[in-house]
Image (cartoon, rainbow, N blue to C red; front, side):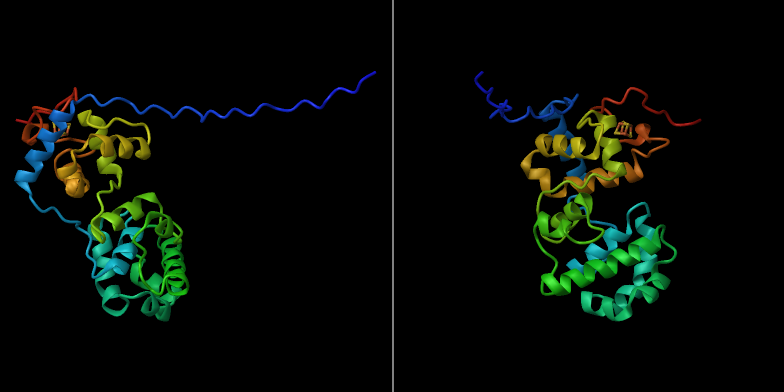
Amino acid sequence: MAKRKPHKKKLSKKKPPKKKLPRPKLTRAKIAEMFAIWQRMNPNPETELNYHNPYTLVVAVALSAQATDVGVNKATKALFEIADTPKKMLAIGEDRLRGYIKTIGLYKTKAKNVIGLSQRLVDEFDSQVPDNRADLESLPGVGRKTANVVLNVAYGQPTMAVDTHIFRVGNRTGMAPGKTPLEVELNLLKAIPPEYALHAHHWLILHGRYTCKARMPMCYNCAVSHICKFKDKTKPVD
Ligand code: SF4
């Protein structure tokens, strides 16, 4: 009897279908109108984290995970006076670094990461902070969000670092719905007109931090309330 040929699994040449992003509830024109309003109110928004150079920016952003910018600034004020380069940070060492940042949540892990990323910058990048995502994300403690902040703030790239504020504003307004930060990020990158792309990240963070707050959004005092699709808009308390 003839031997049966071993069954070969047919490999499809087709790429797997890309997951569809949730559709925005606002038109591109309405989204552009929102950014035009924020631009008029604050033409040059900036990060509220204190930093002196790309290196201290990476450290500050890495420390800011699940912490407030105010808390990080308090801790880094004295630290950055003596350690504003990777080599100086390595000279301090992990134990002393812990002492400087112990008021920040998860400080032990963060101290380990800051020393790890400083060592890698010295060893692999001539003590310079890389200006591309792949190299940034290869640093200990640096994920997509931190890389996006550094690319935007230090290197002027139109990235979108989705934090808790931007995630909320994207979903509430209907501008960029998404179940994950990456979905919101991709929707925002698609929706935001190029002329607003560089500062969009800061306008959205500031809006979320001071107006579209987590527990009680101040819809009654919101400059984009007439465009926003949030159903349960708040009214001032008498
Ligand atoms: S109207 Fe309310 S929910 Fe909408 S963006 Fe303004 S503060 Fe946020």
